[in-house]
Image 1: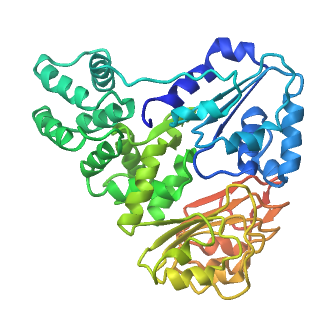
Image 2: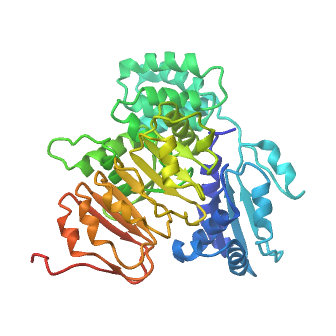
Image 3: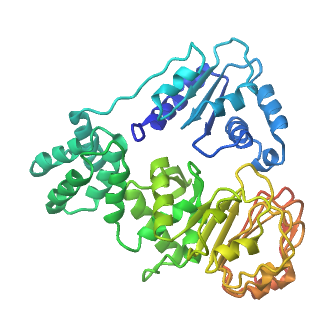
Length: 463
């Protein structure tokens, strides 16, 4: 059953001091419904070693499998496979694992109780149970009041709310997020809403619907935008804020910058327990964040339902749609040979296009004109060839380029509305043209994963 706290418990085991001292090597990967052997191997190797992501993405499955086998050989290891949906993911990995009979362990989490029977006879399943009413009330109080305790005037209605959550920790946490932003005289109304939608449901989706309905209108699109990221993905906060700003989802608050206002939006979602901080900055503030997989599933479904954002998982998905759609935003995974202009036939009103491929492959792109003149957000994924037509997309506010070679085209200054330029995993030295100074609205210039650095035009720098 989803929402019982399986991943939370597995993580507590994973980071326990006794576990860390007992095993020589520990590795973690999130499996979920959409996975490949390549992506699972990359996740495990990345969690075990300090090598760069770029190094692993360039390797094929056989090389990755051999790398993993060598890392684990003659070492006692613990590997966690989180959110396993079927035994096939295990079958893909098993041959890559060294078996030295030295006490190494595999720990997996799954919402399907009968999955353990498909593994080896010596597997030892531990089935989580729902919380009791008293435990539910204790957890709700902890999330709302910490050590202060619940005011006596709210104890009765608070206990009834906790009881209605049917012992699911995730539901309790989500409801705590609603109550945290609700006046005390509004708790009865929350209890009434919960009784009407949760009593006959065994999952958390109705509680998620309630959480969404309680959000202010300006936060709803910001939450739905998380559908653009992969499930279980750790999301860089700064890049998320840049995307929100480029999409026009953020209204500037008086006395604050747009990025500061966007950060306030994020903190509001965090305070409602819809988003979780996974890493803090050294000084202050959140560096990375993440969604529970059920919250992410809800965002994907709701974003599609409201024609806010469409997620494509393969080159066949777009053609399953009946005729052109009115989606303005598309996130495409694994579209293979599908060309951008073909997407435009299905999504004629496209304003944001985000391409990605979790296994690190590259999209072949054509030299045909992109034909997306009104695009505001463009992430070309792992394209080997970056079309020159990109510089004709004069409405672009956000642009991500990868595999660019050594030079950014001088015509980049045609993008007069560009606010964010990100260059990732380039091969070799990156040279910025002098025309970069003509981009008056450019606020965020970010280089990530370059091996040799970049050349910045210094002759116009002011001291």
